[in-house]
Image (cartoon, rainbow, N blue to C red; front, top):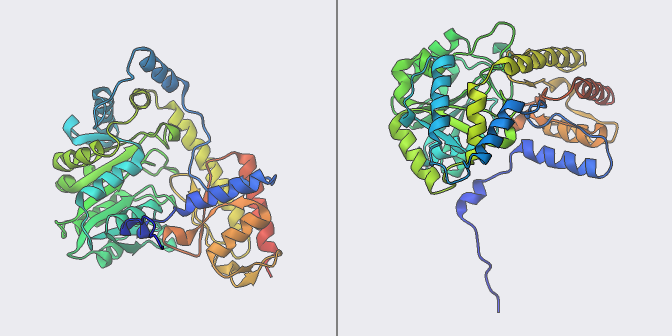
Length: 404
């Protein structure tokens, strides 16, 4: 007798593994085989979490802060977030307009789950962080790309946004400074984008500003909700402590936005994970209220590494590379390297072919740009040591030199 096996929900067919994680998994497998793999695939700071932050978490545990926390965040952390928004962004959020989640990704999942119905469009500038369209599709949304061009420094232009908008737009996702390109939107850029957004009052706006402190060459970050306060009732400002404070493993993301949206997102989180680790929240509060000296040290280090990597990449025949103004990534173009064959005999027709062959033959892990919505490019993380970056760039140059 044939017995059917239990099945899965139809939505799982829309659920893909992020390319960043897939490349990191393959890199770990090659390391396990004994290869010296240089991974530039993940956006994770190589700095240690500040000692004062760790000590704050230790004190919280010793003080008995080990019970269930409020779903939307502890009062202490929410107050620290409110102070941070006011001090650094000129935003005045009440505690009822703030929530804390398990990393910025859960903030986004909460927001999309609360608002997206099947067929709703989610406008996402490309190149984009891989999780935005994956999350939108999971909840039945339709990602719509607004292309950001290399000649514009990968900034979003008002005409590109306008071309992607429609009456079906439910969300517009903005991520500047950008992962994966490091693009930064200036004040004039944001004002032009805001003018487009005013014409679509049915659309929510997600402004992911998690790389806000990592800007270079005199560039400044501007919070969209401060630039366009008349849109604040539709803007969800997303942030977290992972990037600026080297706290990726603590899993603390947060958001400020209209109270009615925060309330619905909190209801969703209450039925999913409830509140996040009380110890991690104590650590995050200490980070936000602590001295900014570590941020300056990290920013200066990333700026120096960025320049070193971009200059090395630009010296490789067939490779172009815009100079990023923020974050800790480089996004080189490799159109001049395609249509050839590697030393190892692999055909390199696409940027994914390039990234795969580079990993297998030179043991350098990066992510192909097509995974971020715009190829043929690569995303390289500069959040690792100078020695690793120099050696990785040398291996990339050797790989390109071997293409025939």
